[in-house]
Length: 487
Image (cartoon, rainbow, N blue to C red; front, top):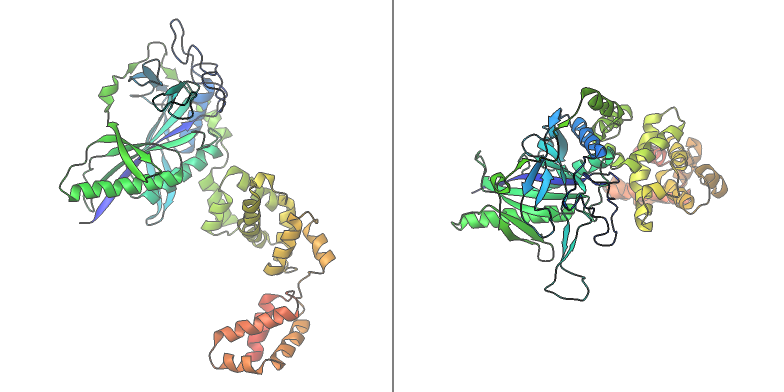
């Protein structure tokens, strides 16, 4: 039997406010344990929560960006459950009426092409604290420490419909969502610090079946690699259970990265288990039209729109356009380089900039472990190199030498070209003379070429390029060689 996975993601996005969602306590990462938990965060007697306006605005920004409905009136509820790092005994969240409903995220599936993943909702809530089982002093394997610094940190929980059909699709969706929340600056996206983490709801069913199978939820996946591996394992586990005549039980599971497996954590709760009821300390949240329209007017051009513009305006491929919009720093670098290009053939220049950024620049940044924002080669300097590629002053091979010198701090492209004498030879007469000399000394290679060996032609090209120390225009070399060999 052929099986398919049915996957939905619940993503917890930590909002980029300086203070918590219901108190003025700071949200900075890395503070000593329990130094950022206020009386409000742990609900000491006599305290009252006050909603953070910045958290609400970030939720609105997300809803507008995904084309969702922003509920003009939403309600905060108490979600009741016991856990050691939840000292209040409840979490303030939204249930029946969330701030954001609907919308979609477009991503590229490796098997289905572009897909629109529908979103059910996005609601505001507070984070819980954190249980620490290792690294405690004195060392004791039976001791758990509770750090309440995260308690009250503002979260936007984004819930997708079960529209994903593979681990690869889930990762593609999660990456697009990660890009978007960083792009509109509602989250720093730091997965290592827990700012962006996913819960995956996974079930399987026979291909062609429309009824959903029994799902299991895999909690707290904080890397794209773990997300993919966890879904792949869970999909195999459920298929094997069903094929062995057993039933999949609805439960919450954890992913063990060391063993690359999921293991049972607890029986999956349903909504009624949490005994939701409206929080009596918080009135309904009311959002007026003017607020929504102001947020809409302040949104930047979104990634999907920018990609479409890059492909239509600059004739970049979809692949290159995606690379140039990988994050805010990358797109900023690309657009600043375009401004500095100063050439009549903007499309050719844009393509050369994209190639340089995806090739030499990316390799150098990776080698030196630098972000693009800290690149020693500025956008305007890279534009100067792209300009010399576009006007055929440099070949691709010579451009690599020039880029290496730029990275080493030897100046801009024009200065390096002049100092090293690297200007490409594009004079047809000069190239013809060198081609004639190479052909006169290559009778055996010519015979191989005429005997049907295509590699012999590449050998002749290589000899001409070597004779010109790599300076000849490769396109002209190829054209002249083909003409003379044909004669």
